[in-house]
Image (cartoon, rainbow, N blue to C red; front, side):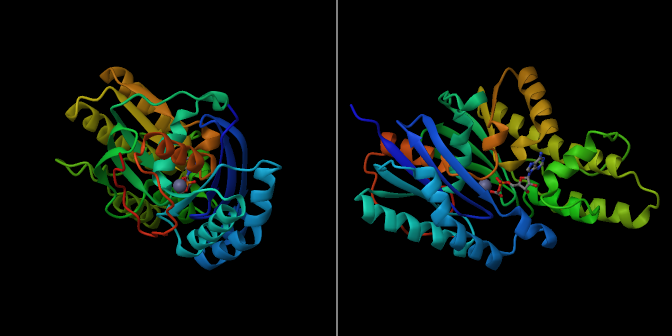
Length: 334
Ligand code: KG4
Ligand code: ZN
C-alpha cells in the first residue's frame, strides 16, 4: 500500500506553519515560522501585522514542508483565530486542494492542541487513552473538556476573561520582561520563592470555569503598592497561583467524572511548574497524566494534520470544509 500524506496548515495567530504527516502517525516535516520578532515590541500580537506576515511567509513555509511530496489531503485550522490569518490559511489550503485534487479539511485549532499530546518524547506516536480530561492552556484559550473518544467532546468549562497564557504575557509586560511572557516569567520564577507573596486563587466553586484577570490585577496592585520588589518572587507567586488553579480544576473534573487519564496541551503546557505539580497531583489521585512534548506545545501544523487524520479515520462522513470561524466553539463530530 502506498503512503498517505496529509499536509497541515496553521495560521490562526502568530505562527505560520506547514507540516506533512505520514500515515497518520509520523511527522515527516514541520516548518514553523514564528512572528515573535514582529510582535515583541508591542508585547502582544498585532492582528494586521500578523496577517501581513502570514501572507508573505505562507508560500515558503509550505514549500519547505512539502518538498516533492504530493499530499493526499490538505488540512487547515479554520478557527478559532484571527480572521486575517484564517483567510490566508484557507486560501492556501483551497489552492493546494485544487492543484493536487485533494480534499480540504478544516479543523479546530484547539482540537489540534489536544491531539498533539499523542506525540511523546522524540515525537514517538502513542494514542490517547479514553475517556480523558483535556486541559488546553494557551495564549488565547483555557478550556477543560471531557473527551469520550476521538471527536466526542463535552466542554466542562473555559476562562471567563483572560486565558492563562495571556495572564503570563501581561504579568511579564508589567515587569518589563519581554514577549512572549510565559517563558520569561517561568525563568524568573525558578529563582524565586513561591510562598513569599500570596496571590489569590480564583477557584469559583461548583463549576469548571476559570478566571485569571483577578490574579493579574493583584500583581499590578502589588507592584504599585510596594517598592524594592523581587521580580523572581512576584513571578513565582503568580505562577503558583495560576498553576494551583489549573491543577485543582483538572483533578476535580477527573474525580467528578471518574476519569483516569488527563492530557495537557497548548503553549502553557511547556511550563515546568505546571507539568511537575500536575504530575504530582495526578499521581496522588491515581490518574495518568500526559503532556504535549514542549516542542509541539505552541502552535504548529503537525497537530492540525493529526487532527485531520482523526477525522479521516473516525468521522463517518468527512467532507470538504473550507468555511472559517474566528470564534469557533468545540463541537463533537463523531
Ligand atoms: O498555544 P500557543 O502557542 O498559542 C495560542 O494558541 O495562543 O500559546 C502561546 C502562549 C503564550 O501566552 C506564552 O506566553 C505561553 O503560551 N507560554 C508559556 C510558556 N511557554 C509559552 N506560559 C507559561 N510558561 C511557559 N513556559
Ligand atoms: Zn494555539
